[in-house]
Length: 325
Image 1 (tube, helix red, strand yellow):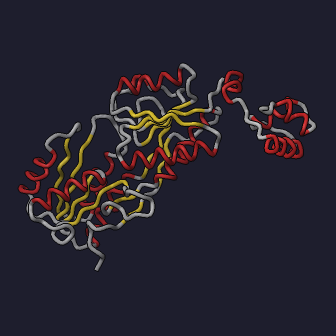
Image 2 (tube, helix red, strand yellow):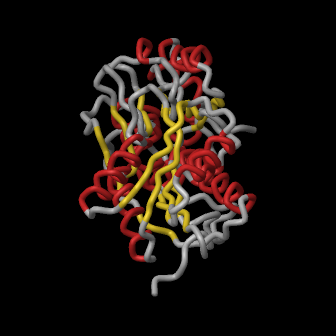
Image 3 (cartoon, rainbow, N blue to C red):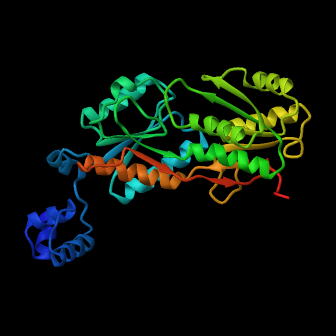
């Protein structure tokens, strides 16, 4: 027979109210907490989270909005978020928006309808009108008109670091290749600070920045490389673009990294112990997930949270760059 809260209270020698306070993380005497937790363990008591949610107006669930589950970075981030939430006895709804603003609006309504307690979102869609500062929402990379909390890697430092790493490897004519969205977000700092660093160090560079959704990317890259044949070091908006650039270079008969060196951004790999897919500016995915979860749960609990969290990046070497001589 399934154990009840009354059974736990009886075994622990305390009142039902004390058991409830322990389960809900409220303050009780340490001796009381120890007895209750031991009784819960012995009886294998499972709290009724749904019933508890009706009383506390909490569901202990969080929605994670991603543009696509196919992207390795997004998949790794989702895994880390789920792990962080589980450690706090929260469940996660994974919402694959496919960049559809209407789908994202429906997910946001889940908070307003008390179906989830809050949202962590990676979104580039036009949903600014649905976001408000009193919504339990933590954004990744993107900021909104309203004062919304967001967590981001240091994209500015990443742009500078890419220049530094290419110059260390004796590249002399650099390029940035990427795509961009009209919506404001921190990823635009990758190009901006790449250019700032090139100018500061008086390095020749060229830029190909394509408006998303992208089309005929290979043709655009080929035309860009035809127009700038001296390029020997390329920094791209992300690792996916870096892989595309490497394919184009190979088709052109140019060898990576002997003729052209390439650095991406994200730190993608197939498995945790594998090498990076390309040389890359590595985002601290696990730390981004932890800070996002911590911020969101603090907001849900009514606490004040810093609006902007910027986390450090690092360079990860792989086959697309040469060793430093």
